[in-house]
Amino acid sequence: MARRDTFLRGFLPAAVFPFGGAVIFYLLFFGYMQFESFLDHIVSTSQWISVLSLGVILNLALFFLFIRSGADRSARGVLGATFLYAFLVVYFKAF
Image 1 (cartoon, rainbow, N blue to C red):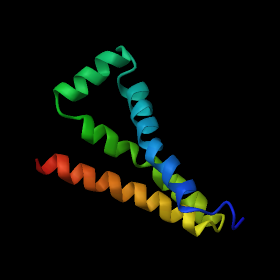
Image 2: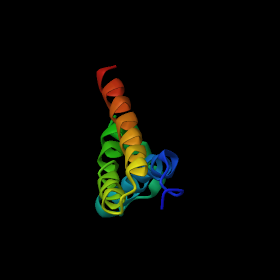
Image 3: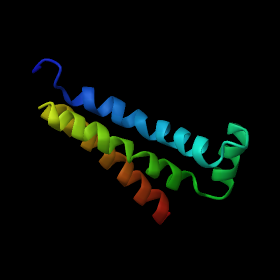
């Protein structure tokens, strides 16, 4: 397990999961419209950062999966990606 327990093994999926969460959000609440229209809508109403930050919730499951399996370095990677998204959210909300 030690060979598979790396920072990058946690960081890469955690960097992609929020986009998957945004797609799930689209399917649950905006499935009646085309995906391009959904993207245009959230960008034009400045809600894209909120939708993306909701997608970060999926990282919680990934984090606990790594913690329960004893992959502490991978869990740190998930935290690193989550903090990166948090800094982006704060930056775009402030400016």
